[in-house]
Amino acid sequence: MANKFVDLNGGNDANDGSSFLLRKKTLSSAAAVAAAGDVIRVMGKPSTNSGTATWTKGSPLVTLSAAMNQLIYGDGVWIPAANVTATANTTAPTPKQGVNSSKLVCGAGFTTGMVAYFATGALNLNTYQQLTFWVQSSVALASGALSINLCSDVAGATIVDTVTLNKALNAGQWTAVTIDKGTPFGASIQSVRLTANSSLASATISLDNISACKAPSAANCLTLNSLISPDNAVWYPVQSISGTTVYVDAQATTAATLAKGYRGATGSTTFYMMQPTVVSIGTGNTVYDQVFSGNGSAGSRITISGGWDSAAMTTQSGLTLIDRSDWAASGINLTGATGYITVEKFLFGHAAFPLGLVSTARGYTVNNSGFAGT
Image (cartoon, rainbow, N blue to C red; front, top):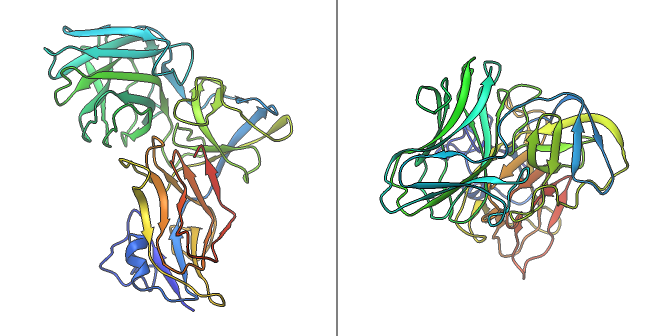
């Protein structure tokens, strides 16, 4: 029995996975060096907590003791550029927050540049450095096709901060996006703007619940890609964040405030958050973020073990959260023909399927893991 080491962000598959310094990047590559009885240690993150929250049994509403984010856009009509039609949409796609979302229909004559803007009122955002928001496109878009700008004037003309969409978008899917600028946003923001970096001719873009949030390392970092918990054990996906009001989500088409919600006892508890280890996107439910082809045996299982610390991977101090962003693609595919695999300390968010299994294999075990909004 040996330990193998995997870092899904900073690893290198040219390494042999035998130590922290030689950690691999993917489970696919780790499978090539794993033997029955081995433990595949996968880097994860610890939970954080900030303040308290009130949870109500059977309700999707979670009320924070103090706001962590600054809402930039919740409801209302944006002001469109030429060849763009803007509406405050209440129907398909169903809004994820409030009573409507911004729907921007680009005509055949629209190409690139400012799509539309929204006057936010005066906002000081210099204690925040990430934007989190929902976006949907009627057509598939490449990574980098869209940017959101924060502007110092009321008409989206004087850009102070820019974050560029760092992932591709599938067509017709609400997608949870969080982008880290790396430095604080401006202290005098009065409008938010959507910019097309590649042609949006005849495309429709929808936006909802745009918020500024704290740095990824902050204890009070809360985003649409975070999971939340009343007890640091059972985790829920986030549908929307507006001041002290947070709603639990369910599926991509779940309307604002209509998820089944929290299932525990009503009460106020410490508010826990888990940030994703990996945020990725795929084109269908047979597309997995990770694939593991190894096999254990009845008396000597292989364990894929998440939640190991980032300093040396000697302490299992958290969980490994794989977030698939838009419910289209899946988590980990266990493709070994015979099985005998244990998966522990993993969470899956916005996934079509958390795990893929072989129907003729046996001996699968899942321990201390969760499937939030999958």
